Length: 403
Image (cartoon, rainbow, N blue to C red):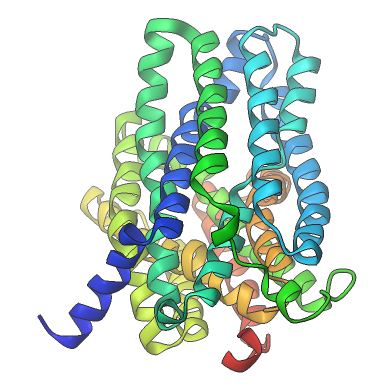
């Protein structure tokens, strides 16, 4: 085995041999299973059970995103100042349980809207902030930060692959009531797992708390990170919204092809997440991230060209590589821009992902009625260009500052 291969394998091995990294990996897998089990079916449930209109079904995501944005930033700032992540993770998982279980029994659109808004805050970003804290604490892990982060990020992707499959089986045999109950119970199971598996004596203080008091407020660079990340993830959300329509309406393919294409991306994401992290460790986080955004621009341009099915499948494999940069390495880069406020940096990046659905829905919804459907992908390419330019001119902190 070559030195490069050994370095890559050792980076993955650390995740499964180190108790702290392994605990985070398992937690994110269960969260991916829970979220993936109910989220894809939320709009169908709203229209069939709550008799909501298409607009109302889509609007369910809006309060969820807005509340998540406001609360997540505030609590991330507190976690940086207090030097703790575990209490916030436990609180978020408890809220997830409280908000999902009642959904199993409600037949009111208004109550569903309120419950989903309450559940808008999630533990996802805090797990990655904690992951960074552990990487900084464990000296032997610093040189493999990208590989470790990519491997751990893969856990959520694995859960999100199996979640929709299990969700479909649960709906067929137990209906939406059982689906929401099990999703809430999975959130509760994660809470119990974290409560006992993450030992307080092994938990590092945050880098901000360990060195000095975290700066007050949100630094301008993190506001820029949030805005730039919005453009990245608005492109990703736009793909999720309009690629199925493009395939069925413009290319006249069956709905089953849509499922195949999205599954291809999810499966190859499991390969590219750790690989992307490894290559970012070798060529530099910022360089790999910018390459990923440039590839996203190319992806959207090629998607609009009426490619044959084989070409579309190849493009979805290509998109899995892009996700390793935008959803994996991109978060490491965001953290490096504000090393003394890791919680805020992680939240700024991850909350942009959650909020992007609102942005792409409003922006693309108004354009799709006046321009041909294939042309919407050029708009998404422009989003990626704007994001790439913004991130290109952000200043990355030195390794000494990150320590």
